[in-house]
Image (cartoon, rainbow, N blue to C red; front, side, top):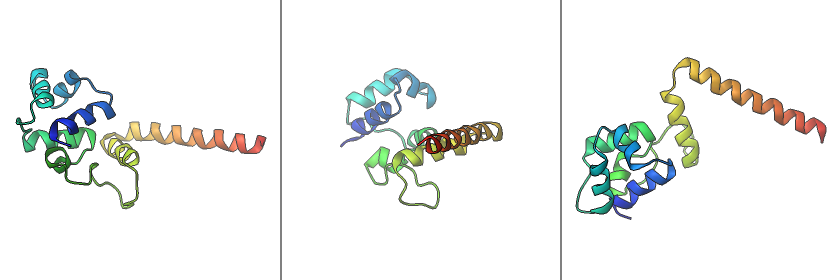
Length: 119
């Protein structure tokens, strides 16, 4: 897998359009298009770090394919990529947003308890 493939994978996994990724890392859409089509064009390390910060993909993976794919977060090394991405998103939230997420999680627990009582 080359850098073009890895960037394409980031777009697919995050359901992003080229335009959205370009805006997120402050480059032009045509630059993203070139990155996807021309394997000789290399993303700069600073842009790879921006992608890492915004989407959780390890900059070394983006640039060179070095594992781990998802930036390490938390103490549990057995987390799936999806769990790691969720934790990275939580790290970016302010206290109000985190409280809303926790409230949602509690409501899921209550729904699950209700189903268990019915069965």
